[in-house]
Structures are given as structure tokens and as C-alpha cells.
Image 1: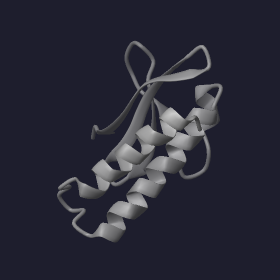
Image 2: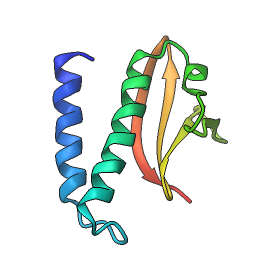
Image 3: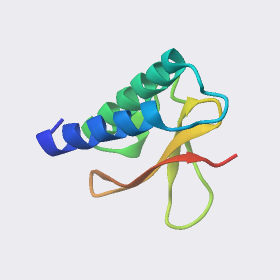
Image 4: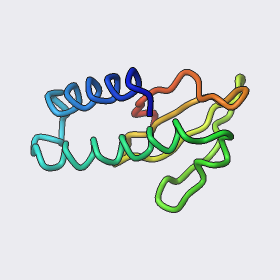
Length: 98
């Protein structure tokens, strides 16, 4: 992972650990969720195609609509959604879309 992406990931983790998530009041639960997010972001950074995100435990699937977006499960209702174009992940979002 590049230094700028690593810095972004660290900021994301700090945000998630301090975010007032309903139902996630236990720090250990937040830490585990952050670790799951980082594993998925690391894999996404290394992937050359969207299909490379199709690994056990990620619940990878495509979403309906244009442009084509994909989703991997994080925890509970939280998912990372993204587009893929030219070997790069684009518009990566952490969403509660259910």
C-alpha cells in the first residue's frame, strides 16, 4: 500500500474508532470492524480486477445500476462498495445500504 493510501487508512481507522455508531459502543467491536475494513481495503488496493475481491468471507457481489458497482461485506449492515475501471478501484465507499 502506498504511503498516501496508508495515511488515508489510518485516518479512516481513527474516525471509525471514535464514531458514535449505534449498536457499536464497545471499543473492541469497533477495533474488529476496523481490522475487517483494512483487510478489504488492502485486498482492493492489490486487486487488478473486481473479481479478485471474490474471496471467502467477503460476500462479493455486483450491484444493480450504472455505472457497475460492487460490494463486499464488512460487518452487520456495513459494506464497502466500489467501481472498477482500468485496473483501479474508484468511488470506494463505506455504506450501510440495506
